[in-house]
Amino acid sequence: MASEKVETVVAGNYLEMEMEEKDSKSNSSKFSRLLWHGGSVYDAWFSCASNQVAQVLLTLPYSFSQLGMVSGIVFQLFYGLLGSWTAYLITALYVEYRTRKEREKVDFRNHVIQWFEVLDGLLGKHWRNLGLFFNCTFLLFGSVIQLVACASNIYYINDNLDKRTWTYIFGACCATTVFIPSFHNYRIWSFLGLIMTTYTAWYMTIASLIHGQVEGVTHSGPTKLVLYFTGATNILYTFGGHAVTVEIMHAMWKPQKFKMIYLIATLYVLTLTLPSASAVYWAFGDMLLTHSNALSLLPRTGFRDIAVILMLIHQFITFGFACTPLYFVWEKFVGVHETKSLFKRALVRLPVVIPIWFLAIIFPFFGPINSTVGSLLVSFTVYIIPALAHMVTFASPTARENAIERPPSILGGWVGSYSMNIFVVVWVLVVGFGLGGWASMLNFIHQIDTFGLFAKCYQCPPHKT
Image (cartoon, rainbow, N blue to C red; front, side):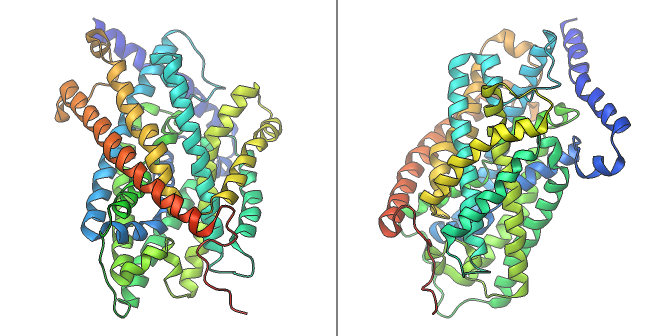
């Protein structure tokens, strides 16, 4: 009888989103729906796959030079699976939170649920504050990384301006994301973004194989523990892109269908990251230790210029993905989140871009900044906190009995889930945050000592006069 009751609640759980979908179909033009208003399983998959690998695609060969070929491949597979598991945990907690709230007749039609609200509803204000701090700080620096990457990439097409000046320009361009209301409206951008990263990954693979190994190439990694754990945390960062999982789920017509999407997206992303990183490292070896952007070593051709342009557009999209949750938080703080005026919301959102712009100018260290963010922020945001939250939420027998989303029996049910969660917390705390944080901070400080804060042109070759 109890299970019958739960099933009834779940069946009606997403009624409002389905009604919204029907409204969209009746009131919007076909063209507008095609380009602008997404909410299907496919939209969510494109969003996850497109968001998961962006500029980090260009830094993975650099990580391979720090780790060595074997460790690089193993860490990609390992963190890909670990990230998929914690994304599943976030999904389960979202479904649990939303179901409980909708039993209380809470209406979410004009409100986007976010991760810190899930933690607040399930575990209280202290968990909310913890989630809010780590999530917002990670997304802030995630946006910074996209701006730094824009400047780093465009320089390989046009070096008439230094990278700092390009950061000013792209900061202004990326500020236009304030006009994109929510993740519903990234439909065409997510689709195009995935095509762009797919092209770039296979360009890097094929171009490296055609180029062949440089004369006297060496593959000495791993040589130092500092470099080894720096490379490992960059891969931790790569597969930690699910800080926006809740917002992507909420944009779906039927969010309960999300649970396998992230895993499938990760498997696709691995078909891009493994061949490209392996091929570039095979061709250039230890040269990558001083070239964190793989495009800087590939010969300039029309194909490379296309890859640079596509990655620039994709970084604009990823900037929007990282920044939109920050826009939502700020809207809620100011009190305009539920207003229907797009212009008013866009105006309120603009101040969010300013600190991102400023930080990108202070820390232009393309590559090392990924590892630092990975170890200090990603480790907690999308690995440790979701695993702990899941264990605490379902600690009591009653909570486990009434859980909307139960752990898959193939993984051992609740016993397997708790075992996996404990492993995630211990591994990421010791290896990701502890050793990774030590290594990435040493490397980051080395970049500051070498190039200085506000570096005008990070890792630029001497300019020809």
